[in-house]
Each structure stands twice: as structure tokens, then as C-alpha cells.
Amino acid sequence: MAGKSSTRSEGQFAVGSDVPGKRKGRRREYWTRYRIMRYVLVPWLFLIPILALHAFVVVFPAAQGVFYSFTDWRGIGEAEYIGLRNFEEMIFEDQSYHDALWRNIQWMLFFVTVPFAFALFGSSLLAKVRRGAMFYRTALFMPFILPSIVTATIWRYLYNPRFGLPTLVGYEKALLGQSDTALWSIAFADNWHFWGFLMVLFLTAMQGIPPVLYDAAKVDGANRWQEFWHVTLPGIRPVVLFMLMMVMIWAFLVFDYIFILTGGGPAGATEVLGIDIYKNAFQRFEAGYAAAQGISISIFAGLIVTAFAFLRKRGWEI
Amino acid sequence: MRARPEFFLLKKQRDSRVFNHVFLSILVVFSLGPVVVLAMNSVKSNSELGLNPLGFPQEIRLENFGNAWERGEFERTSKNSVIYVVGTVAAELVLGGLAAYSLARKNPPGANIVMIYLLVASTVPIWLYLVPLFFLWRQLGLLNTYHGLILIYTALNAPFSIFLLRSYLIGLPVELEDAARVDGANELQVLLRIIVPLSWPGFLTVGLVVGLAIWSEFQVALIFVHKPEMFPITTSYFKFTDRFGRDWAMTSAGAFMMIAPVLVLFLALQRRFVEGLTEGGIKF
Image (tube, rainbow over all chains, first blue to last red):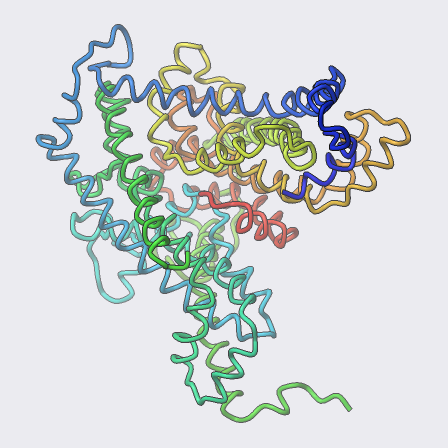
């Protein structure tokens, strides 16, 4: 790490290599109270406030969550140990959990395809453009900075069955009000907000591809598609794969857009894990069960990370 | 002598440029169109909005903004949001800045473990700790308080802020700090007189990104704040659309008021936003 350079210069008279027999003594001498203060205590004093806060907000409740997942805790009062009962219920009995999990997987399938297609298309167009490149980048990135509540409001309006976008093509059903279209409609609104972010990431990666590769492709007579497939995509592969992994994890966390637009309805058709946990914890007060569900999400995230780590070991460049 | 570069292009290459611009323009319409519709609706009357839902307004009526401001209680909720944003950004810059400085320059024993901890922490799914955290916060009386929410926001944004500030600090030359030390400056003076003045762009980027995240934050605020007088602008707007959802013109005006300051800041400092959000931030 580059940070070492500063301490090195001061530590140059550190461990003496001059007289072997006196080494130990010299070392003890080196760790004077002043040096411990300066190189250990003070730096850690700088680190501790935020680390302690983070541990208190994240690690401590996470550990509590693991504990409560083995209990029938209801948020207040005593928690009774019930072993693996919550997990058994989740895996074998709870149909709403299974349905929710399936919706998260559908959500994931949408988000590893549609935004990636948009972003790859947009960034490969934009990488070739000079004039107006900044304008395009700013405009396409802009939806990403909007709050979820505003994006949701805009799209609720655009999906309106009386005068929204569908009416332009003569479709007069409520996209958000029907079980078979609601989830995809919400996903598309979220995609509108999200894909510009992916595009900028890809664009930055594309700028790192050596131009000679494009020249060589041109000499070989590659067309637009071949150039994309054989030069651009391999060039940005690490970023694409990393973002695939992150998007797959995020697909299990989705909450805002669905809560705002449908709240899980119509008739539970958009109830994903996040909504299910929210209802279990804060409406049905089954906090122990909700904690177990939260752990299941972490396990899915862990599996995804492990799978990508495994593929990397097998020689995929990630 | 210098002709425009297009002059030398083959016809085929010119065609490909036209192709790129045409499709990029379509994408721009897709990205900006919905926001433009929101802006136009915010100045229509409701009767006009029914007849002309997606087109340009016939006349500009600004009373929607006043109505939304009153009935959506934007005065109080935007004040609340500013408190959440300023509190979080201040805590983040001070505490995160201290930690980043320590990691970048002091490299104390255990620094690697801290980095790994932060990396893992930033990918832990929020649902793992959110439910117990709620009941912990309730027990401690931190629900419905400014500091309760600010503490959570500061912690959740800490890994991002520390990473970004650390990488910025590593890029600064060490010689200036050493010179200051030779002149007898103590650690705090080095930090305040040398590091902060030199690295303000890094701090600004972190401040902007974290500020934007808090201004837009919905999920945590929904769970930890139930009293209307403590609502930030996002959850209060959610309740507002719940009540006045039929009044599209007024709710559009409300949404536009919420994003107007964000859009202005974004357009003014867009390079910083984009850099901060894409480089440091595998977030959102």
C-alpha cells in the first residue's frame, strides 16, 4: 500500500541489523511509549469512532438477527428458543416465501438482461461519438440521481390506464393493476432509473481499450457487430462480470419501487422477499421469522459471491 | 488549413456516425422524456391534464407549486431532510475523513483487516440487520429522532466514504506533510492545515454523493421514522401522494420541487457526481 512510504521514512532506523546479538534489545527500545502512541494508538484513535459506529449499526444487529432467527421473538418480550423451526417453516411450508423468492429470481433475470442490453448498446454507441458526448452522458445518467419515490411517481403516471403511455397504442388496462404485468412494469421503471449508471461504468471501461485493437479489427474487415463481440466486449469483460454479480445480489434486496408502486399487490403478485420481510417484521410482528428470512437473503448473496469466486478460480477473468 | 475532421471521413464512417447519433438521441428521449412530462404536468391545471396528458401545457400555472408546498408540508419536511443530509454528511466527512487519513498515511497494524472488514461490510445485505436494528433502536429510544437516523445513515455510508477518501489521500504527495512536521506541526495541524485544504475535491465528491443518497433515501426512513413531524421529504411525499394521488398536477409539482435542487447541483457538478457514484460507489 502506498501509505507505507510515509512511515518507512521515519522508521528507517527501526530494527537494527548491525549487531545480531543486540537485536532483541534494540527492538524493545524501538517500541518506546512515544512510538506506540504515534504509530499505533493515534492512528487507531482515528479509526475507532466510525468503525465502532458501523459495528454497532451493522454487525451487532446482524449477530442479534442470527440469534433471534432461532427463536419465536415477536419484537417485544422474551424470545423462546425454537431451534430450526423458522427455517423449516421457510423451506417446507411457507408458500408466500416460495412465491416471493421466485419473484426475486424473475426480477434478477430481468436485471441481468434488460439493463445490460441497454447499457451495452448505449455505451458502445457513445464510445464512438465525440461531438455532444458530454451531453449524451449527462442526459443518460440523469435518471440515476432521481430519488426512487420520484421515479416511481413519474412511472405511476406514465402507466396510468386512462391517459398514460399504453393508451397511445390503444392498451387501456392498468399495467400496475394486473398480476401478470405488475412486476415487469415496476422492473422496467427501475431499469429506466438504473441503466445509465451501468452505461457510464461500461463507457469508462471501454475508454481503457487500446485503440490499436479497433484499428486491427478494421483492417481485418470486421463489421460493427463483430467489432463489438470480439474487441469491445472482451475489453470490458471484468466490469461486466463484476456488475452481473452485484446486480444478482441487489435483485434479492429490491424494496423501494415495489413498496411505493404496488405495496406487494395486486393480490400479492409483486410480493418479493423485501416486502415479505417488511410485513412479517413490522405488521405481523414475527420478528424472529423475519430475521430468519433476512439470513436466507444473506445466504443467497453469499452463494452468488462464491459462485463467481469459483468461476474466477476456473480461469474466468473477473 | 485545418479542415473539420469529418471532411476526411469515408462515406461509410460518416454513415456510422449518423447511426450513432440517431440512436443516442432516441435513448436521450427515453431518459429525459419522463422527467420532461413531470415538469410539464407540474404547470398544468388538472382539467387540462385530463385532456392533454403528455403534451406541452397550453398555459403555465404556477399555483400547483404553492398548493403542493402547503398541503405536502414541504416547508417542514424539506427542513427535516436538510437536517438529515447535513448531519450525515458532516459526520461522514469528519469521522470517515479521520479513518481514511489513518488508513492512507499511518497504515497502523491491522489496517489490512480494517480494509477487508469494510469491503465485506459494504456488501452485507441490509435485510440481515434491519429488523433487529429497528427493535434495538426502539429500545434505545432512537426511533423518530434526528440523531437516530443520522447514526444509521453515517454507518451505512461509511465504507463508501472511507474507500473514496482513502484513495484520494493516497494520491496526494507526502512531502508537504513531512515539511509541515519538520516545521513542528502536530498531527491535528497536519490534518487541518495540509490534508483538508489539499484534498477538498475528494471531500466534496463524498459530500455530494452521500448527500444525494440521504436526500433520496426511502427504505430506512420509512422504517425508523413514523412521526409525521420527523418525516424526511421522501416518506412524507409518499404519504402525500397517498392522500392526493388523484391530483396529478399538484403531486407532479411536489415531485418537481423535490428534484429541482438535485438537478441544479447535478448539472453544475456533474463530473464529480458521476465520478463519485461510479468509481467509489458500488452502491444503490
